[in-house]
Image (tube, rainbow, N blue to C red; front, side):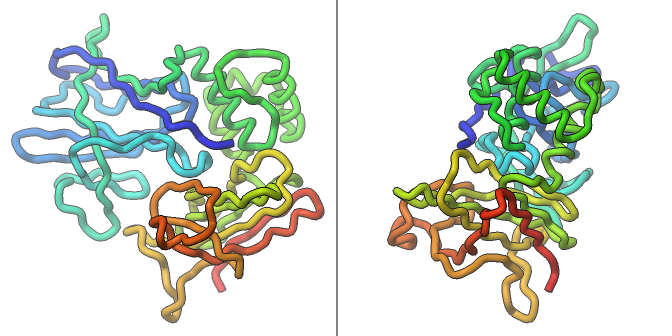
Length: 328
């Protein structure tokens, strides 16, 4: 499955934010949001606020005095390269984990810059203010929740496509099979932690398909490639946090699968041990680049703005394979 480019929409009025500020998620992804607050030439950021599809989260309580409010959102690493475009005009500092940064225009060690978009939220009847995250599909809450379930089912290897937020026998059969295989009761769907349960289940080793598990204390970025007999397609990057697993979205029945992964630090630099990069790959030279990518052309990588990277062959003869990335 190739992730579509999701658009982020903010619906707003010109009213100032003087009460609780909520971010509501009408996307088919579990997202993490960060906000920036400009006030009298000082800019602070805070995050990450995890928001499931079809839910809202209060990110500021009480009266908020600000010249401008800004927002950045990212999808969880389980989805691979974030499908949410980051095209805001304000570059502010964030950290990988939960953070509060008082002076967010001068990044320190462990902080990186991210693009923030200015928003002006709408005021509801209760006096609170709300900004919405939305896709081009313009899901309502019910559709966003179902599309979010479909997307995680597909990542877990179940046939719940297309991801459209429309219920039907195929989606219900895939969901029932998923719940049964994980030993989950049907009433788990009504739990407020249902999406966390699904994400946790998707991030555990599986008897089928390819699973990456990060046994290091570092963040790992991984890429996958598939050979369908006609061409080889490489795709990345997938973020795998320490002590978690992830299933890359590999569809169909490719003749061969390849994998490459590397550990990076808080500043997104490749970690080196004894001057050697900490990575896991092989001898198959395929094209990658530093940012999100997908290409089915593997010749002349450098001439096309890519880098030739050594991928390793994944033995899928048993139907499933778990690759564990560990410290040497």
